[in-house]
Amino acid sequence: MATSLLDKLDLNRIPEHVGIILDGNGRWAKKRFMPRVAGHREGMKRVVDIVESSSNLGIKYLSLYAFSTENWKRPTEEVSALMDLLIIYVDSQLKRLSDNNVIVKTIGDISKLPNKSRQAIEKACETTKENTGMVLNLGLNYGSRSEIIRAVENIVNNSYDVNELTEESFKDFLYTKSQPDLDLLIRPGGEKRLSNFMLYQVAYAELYFCDTLWPDFHEEELYKAIYDFQSRNRRFGGI
Image 1 (cartoon, rainbow, N blue to C red):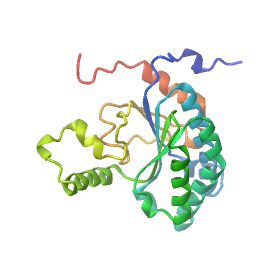
Image 2 (image 1 turned 120 degrees about the horizontal axis):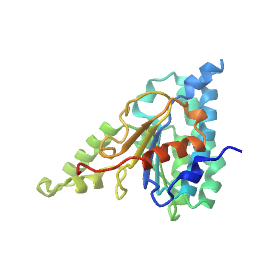
Image 3 (image 1 turned 180 degrees about the horizontal axis):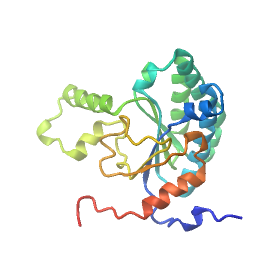
């Protein structure tokens, strides 16, 4: 039996905050002559697997870019299918998330989601808010530039003294308030760009790109990314 990379990981140096851009669902389906929604369904299964694997590894914060502010431009049928899959994910996985002590949070303006989808994710957040394990940030109708503008608006509207503003205090106005910056950002699917994801929080993250499409991104792919992360020397601008 092949040895898993899990055996080679230093469990004392697991990244605290990992972000993943879920990319490649449509291309996965196209390669198999299937409708794009089939790729999203398979991708949802990977979310289930990777959330559990991340929690088991001791990752404290996992941020998944599930639906961006730009994704509304996709065909109506595909957007509707994605919104329905969100409901299915919550309904089928909420007990499992609770049993694994996961705290569900959202990043993004979920007020724009269809009512049933928004209610489902609000239920997940409410049900798990007292948990004490890994925080799962679901990026829904999320865009980092919009997040930064929202933060500035909140600063102005709350009459915050800008002379007291620092890089650290600015974080209090982001969706990820009280959370550490990203340590590792993973993008499967072959593209090498950030696509407006957590631009402020990614400042000193290690970036990991791979060609594996998201529906094929099983736990061993996660281990590869973390193994690569552990091979790097993070100097944060120092020597």
